[in-house]
Length: 163
Ligand SMILES: Nc1ncnc2c1ncn2[C@@H]1O[C@H](COP(=O)(O)OP(=O)(O)O)[C@@H](O)[C@H]1O
Ligand SMILES: O=C(O)C1=C[C@@H](OP(=O)(O)O)[C@@H](O)[C@H](O)C1
Ligand SMILES: [Mg+2]
Image (cartoon, rainbow, N blue to C red; front, side, top):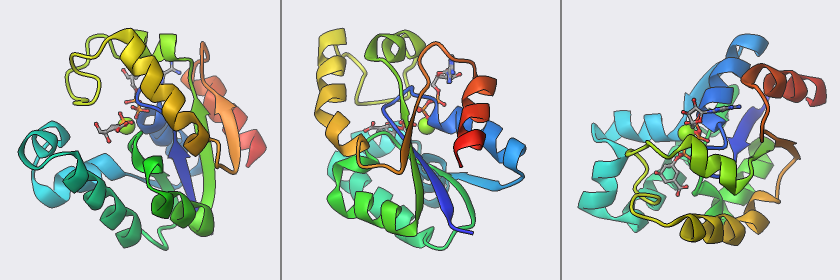
């Protein structure tokens, strides 16, 4: 088999859906953020503070390359699609499922979150702008699933029926 990649904006549910899909399909799952945290021994937020976003983006590409040939589900960080190299690698290696979620719901889901450096101290309009800027990159996918106002169970069922 080839890998199943889950992409989408922060809060779209990639990590959560990946875990549930892994159980439903009986497949292994790996999250690129967790992979990077385990490899570096550092939290994502500390990597951003100590080394900056550019260094983190390099780590993401390294993670994708190291996971090449992975037989299971790979849940990605929301910014992985920024680099064309990453988008091409994912489409070449497997099935890329874009989890779409309305920015208003993303903002609501993440209003208490302090682990995502790129939305800390950002206004709702800043977050909506980042979402719109990234949308064309997310659109380079195998198929798209709208997660807005849907339960995890419904989303997993929809993915299963479309695979
Ligand atoms: N379908 C959903 N409905 C409601 N809340 C959700 C749903 N999917 C995820 N969440 C919640 O949204 C937050 C972000 O989910 P997460 O899986 O970490 O997203 P991502 O990995 O895309 O950033 C978590 O608190 C999670 O419990
Ligand atoms: O969108 C982004 O640039 C990021 C998303 C995060 O992952 P989630 O999409 O799982 O929140 C994490 O990789 C990092 O904070 C940067
Ligand atoms: Mg995640």
